[in-house]
Image 1 (cartoon, rainbow, N blue to C red):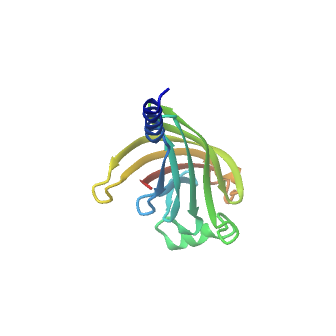
Image 2 (tube, one colour):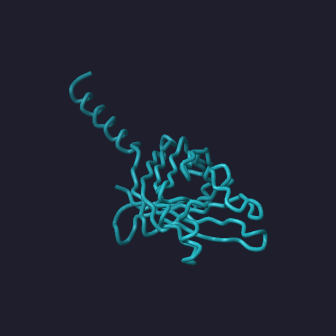
Image 3 (cartoon, rainbow, N blue to C red):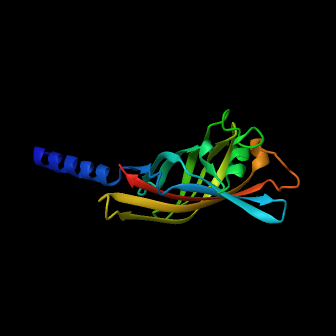
Length: 189
């Protein structure tokens, strides 16, 4: 192989590597709010959200791999009711003084085509780590008109038992099932 062919081969390899490299995205805390629904004695549904979330997402759409690393400030829980917020933060429920963070770390991401459709990972809540699968109901990336960078957004959902995480306050009469909904946006680094 002469030098010209070697240079062309190296340039092609560099281009291929760059076009198939994983992209890293930083969670946008102003557009990311994990929310949840939980039973209230079978007569209504309590809904709340966490208002402080940070983390990163890595996606390699060509290789169909990636990772998610999320940290939620448990003290940012908000039911829209100050009395309920205070109670949820105490030892009966989230015990935020002892367990200030809720985390989610992916183990694998499943793609359909070049779009992620589910994430298997570990949720750590109230000091307990358990597997939780997130279903990605919607996923889209655009060049954000203000940031001039790629921004990806998703709507994800999951369901789990809070009792599996040591939060058994008022079970029964409250059912232990929790529905999780996450709206997330992340900006490419």
